[in-house]
Image (cartoon, rainbow, N blue to C red; front, side, top):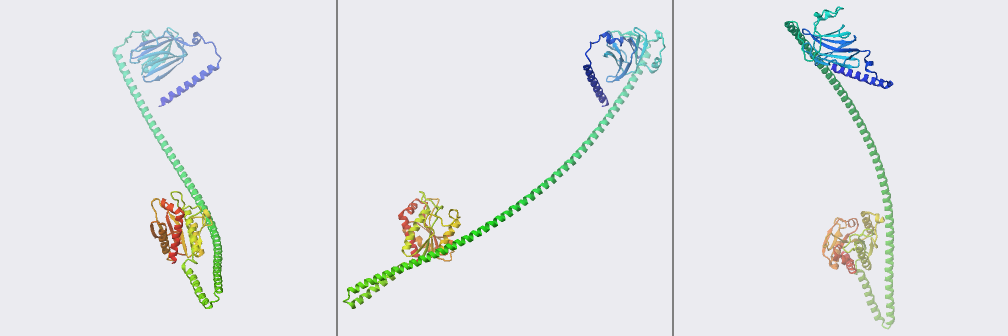
Length: 566
């Protein structure tokens, strides 16, 4: 891990230096490129490199024109020593690479690392001892001993000023391409040196393995500690996030509860306002209805008083007319009597007897006329069903019920008046009865019809209708009455009229039936609702719409009324 970090730093530093160098080159004015001679004028030249083999050692000698600074570094996989010779350049004739025939080192590589540095790389696990010697093919020799013992290195740390005799130095030759150099020393010593070198390498390898193992364990510990640290941090972040989410959720829930309470409060206030407004409207409507009822009661009272007044005047007028007719009849009788007496002066006794016989028949005739009908002085209320905007039932050819009932009622009115009855009509034209007209409800319209009969103090109430059904073959005449009536005579009235209608019209009988119809239930006198026939039946529609049918229907009702009062 540390190695990777250092390598990354080196790459970053190199990249930064390259960028700065590029910027400096851009900033500097363009000059003529220097020649090779100018570039190498102040550099040391490495002219040749030779390799010499000793007992388990290798000596590498580089012929160089001047002493320069050098640096050492080490690398692994494979293990190698790197020597950078500064302010130097490598002659192109120098061989760049060679295999080394020794246990001390395996391979040698030489290259121009950069314009002012020559790099020498030796693949070895042994110790190296670089130093300079004067003289040779060039001004100086740069010597690298590989695999030398420490005692030998100490001896060479302070070499004599003059060169040692040739017999004490290892043989040094240029690197041949295919020639192996043999050590002149004893083979036993060489094996011993190789064994020691092998042990040293094994020891160094073990140490390297131990270092790598220790490094690996350290890296694993660091990684484990880092992972544990990251796990702890992650758990702390998760815990903090969870606490934050819980706080936010709690705040959100509290906010929602507050908003819900505010909405409920606003809704409650709105409902209270609406309820209050509704109560006020209902109060106003009730007051208005009470005012309208009072006004209606007042109008009805005035109308009743007016009708009673008109009825009283009508009765008084009829009485006066009756008295005048009776007076005229008596005067006529007296005139006839005087004429008769004048003609029969001669027979006074006989005239007196004739006068008695004449007065007695006239008196008996008047009494017989008065007792001939039971309708004189009776008040009969007739209600032609429907009217105005209410057409009632409509027949197959378009005949309306409201028109049939009105025609029959008007014809019946004539018959009753001719017999001295007082006839009260709820309507005499095609109109509604209620003062509200078309705006009146069904109950208001029916109530107005009952009110007309009740105010007049009628002796009986007859509501005329025509029946209807979805099946066109339905037919016949029906009489209806209210079974719970206090008078107890509604059934008799309905039955008398039904029987006489059947006799006149020739329609089938559907009987006399109890009902709960409004007009027969809310009148103070015996009442009936008569269904003349079925206007939905084509034959009965034709009969009821004809002049003959209207007369027969009116006559049948009239006969039934006479039977009721007889």
